[in-house]
Image 1: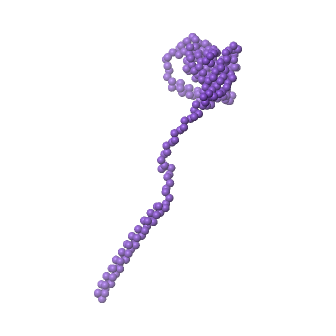
Image 2: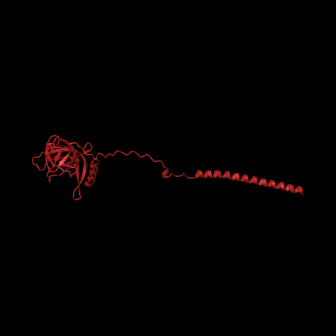
Image 3: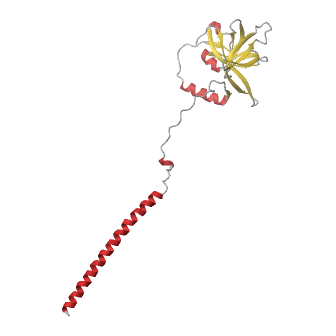
Length: 243
């Protein structure tokens, strides 16, 4: 009986060891089979899309040169906006102790077309922004791909006034706001003129000033290049008064 009990115990141990070895082998095979399956899923999985945050910033393409930059454009002169800009500039501009010439509210200016010249009355108006001149027979045309204006400058109040035929490049088209709220389009050209012994160039709107006292108006943009205006006197340019 004792020998049989020992043999039985030995067989039980062998069975136990054999069963453990079989379980370990099966577990290793299961792990080995799972890895290829996972790898296959990784191959079949679609690639993840880039989120907007992960994209590299692309360099902006260089801007093209504005081919129409030289083309005269419409410009609306807003009195309120202009006044605010002038106030800001006046605050920033330092006060100068240099002598400044004084001009009257009305002066004579000389305009030329290159052949003839005419001396006309001009009103120096600090209430106007842009200078203006009486022009007739206005005609737009092109020269070398640019817009020009052909017009006649004359003093409508003087029957003996010379008729100056002038051609000048068009600077822009200005839309001037009238008191009634409507805007009027006017051509703007750059003209040379003489006042006293000063030779200047300024932008002038081409206007019908036949109902005005002066065929020429000098606005603030030009007056600030001249000097001071004494509203109580006229024709001071030749006197060369300084302050």
